[in-house]
Length: 237
Image (cartoon, rainbow, N blue to C red):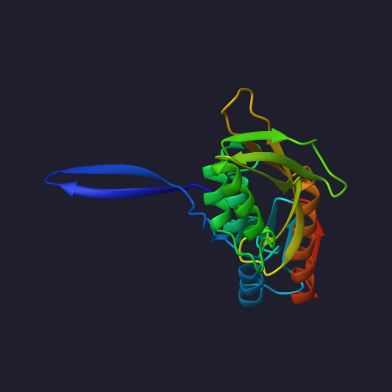
């Protein structure tokens, strides 16, 4: 409630009276912006309680009310918006866009063939062969293993090479998460339109939304396992 304050300041033979309205101070509370599921767990364990702390989650974020009993000031809260991992950001940069052979090769050279993309070395070899070719012809779109087949000529030598139309990558989708899953990436070859032109390539991930929900589901399971007695609710505050 506002209060009326009266200040008396004598100056010589006169008395100067001033009034002032004082507004009640409202503590804004603490608001935390977090970057990983472990940070959410650590904050709740340090500042929260099983009885009065509430966590709300969607496939985009987790919201936390540290103490639901607080009434005379703003409540302490936290938010964690599920952030894409660095590896996912690298893949998203090339998804849904057309890239040439050089760009594709440079991208593949940055991949980890043991963990991320087992086909890395074979893909690079096939693309480099296409890059050297003086003549490229499609020998049918797919074979029985869903590979693109190319008949090529390098100088006076003829041969063939192939590229898969489906790649499988293994990466964590969410920042600071140790959960990896297999993602299917479709490879589309854009055929040359004229003689002497090279093919272009387009990578897409039609099932991305499904993969993302799987990754978020895992993070929520980690949260529930770490905080078994807390109120963890689907939805928003």
